[in-house]
Image 1 (cartoon, rainbow, N blue to C red):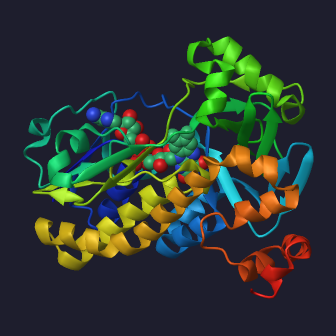
Image 2 (image 1 turned 135 degrees about the vertical axis):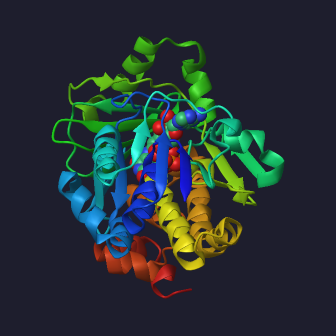
Length: 382
Ligand SMILES: Cc1cc2nc3c(=O)[nH]c(=O)nc-3n(C[C@H](O)[C@H](O)[C@H](O)COP(=O)(O)OP(=O)(O)OC[C@H]3O[C@@H](n4cnc5c(N)ncnc54)[C@H](O)[C@@H]3O)c2cc1C
């Protein structure tokens, strides 16, 4: 099969690897508009559950990637100066650039060509392909130009966030909420290498406006965030890498393919960063598309229909959880002001509606008991 993949992110790279590993005669080319060593962002995280899925699907890749990851068994949530460790939330992280470099090497070893610095701007450029994979990220033009065919929707969420890094290395995956005169600032921060951490700052829109971030320059924006999180940063600077305030686009598509064109990864659907699953979902899309071809052979239309059938149920569940999570952050000012540290940690744990009291108790009995002491009705199941 002649397969042309537009976008060399985790989704496109992994789908290419799966197909080629299974059938070396496939003719596969990945087009990536960036240079080989250019990427945005800092680290990405995988939950323990995400890594379990990867191990179950692909032990070879799991063994290849995990030695490069930083790992922690727990998460720490800070309500101003009070830190609440939350057990039973294992996470692993690695730099996005490092992950891509590892994946480039992995696919190239299989004999797949990656054409860097090659922007594909129209389907005409890949018209000879049997299968065209649109793995070109959240702002995919393939999706935008074919919205009616895909039944696409994009909802811009109201919180503002900015993705920074820092040289301060944190001991666990951490969420810090700091109340200021302008509103609550939240930092999602975690180590992704022995020398660097991701430091993502999120605020409600009203806080963002009151702070004047709309018209603030890069240096003053960093200085403001460094002041708010001075205790966490402990004298280390915030580092910018094409960092700017964004709103999160919640993207969905009713139809995942038309003719021989299929969407994969963020082009197909986005999942809010607060559940740390964007990369995992992109890679699981690749597994499902690969399995659909394994089942249906080279009948493209039938395989693409099977892809959606296989992948929709598990993906919808995580998408719903991601949207519940992003809505929780959209109320963080009220939550931080009205809840005690223990209540905030408990509310965080149960925010997606998928974690019951019994599950909190299984993961972290101390937190469950501390919460039940304040709210006896949860322990009695009332
Ligand atoms: C602020 C933020 C924080 C995040 N944090 C996490 C996290 O902690 N954990 C996690 O798992 N995920 C995280 N994510 C999400 C994660 O980065 C994405 O979900 C994941 O990278 C999706 O993979 P992808 O391959 O679909 O798309 P992408 O990684 O976006 O890759 C798409 C590729 O396509 C290329 N491309 C685009 N257009 C063209 C074109 N016309 N021609 C050729 N190439 C093109 C791009 O250059 C890019 O390399 C975060 C995202 C954001 C925005």
